[in-house]
Amino acid sequence: KGHDCLRILDEKTVCYLDMTGSGNETSAHAAENGRITFMWCAFEGPPRILRLYGEGEVVLPDTERWNELKNHFAGVLPGTRQIVVNHVKRVQTSCGYAVPYFDYKEDRNTLQKW
Image (cartoon, rainbow, N blue to C red):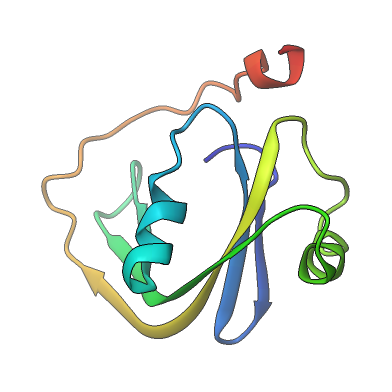
């Protein structure tokens, strides 16, 4: 997702600020069946994929839960439309042998300018 938007709330709860520009399928899927998966790929170093499977919670602005969660962030970034929470039920790694190498250059600032 980029930027400083991910937080580990406790040993079984992870959340991120969901911003404009990436579609809104995560919210739709969480509403449909409650399932959510966060996935990370190693683009440098040893190959590895990490997935956190869990129950999704979508938290909208102007709710009590929003006010509680936003305090975990230094500030809500421009374009933030919701906070997506994963109540983790299972953690799994896999080999990642086919994940290509990528070099990180920098975060885009387009959303902040918008």
